[in-house]
View 1 (cartoon, rainbow, N blue to C red):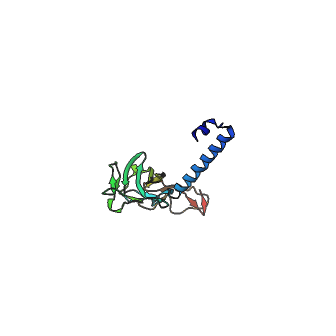
View 2 (tube, helix red, strand yellow):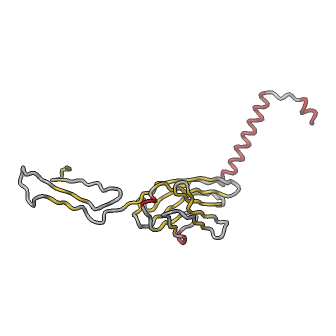
View 3 (cartoon, rainbow, N blue to C red):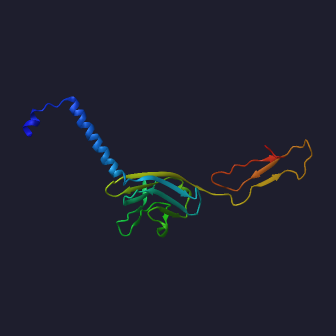
Length: 194
């Protein structure tokens, strides 16, 4: 057989058939692994706008499609602050990060709860999910978290006089307590926006 192989001429069409069969075998192999693949990784901030000094829940949703979970990692910017590894004891690991106070008891493979959120945490958060053998696939999702401060009182309206006649000049001031982002004030007179 070896002698026959050496005497056989390999033409361009033979190479094309050989490569075609190789591509088909690779597609079949990938489809077999595709049944155990990681899909639909999504990150949600709850609530969508987090009030300063309140808690934020980061929900990392994913579909392993039957593959075993290797790890889930949460990042603020490029820096990891929480990791879940089901194969280790303890499964949860928290990394120091200024301003991030993870609630260990409420955090797991699909969520991290951050207590007492401050303005410095406004910005990009991401979660990275990795499946274990045989697929070893990894996917990541990210989201912007906004930390807000609502005004502690209603806006106040001051006018120069208590009564006005048609043709009088109206001087008024509308003031809102501090907030972040800044409150947008709109003044209306007789249902007309000024």
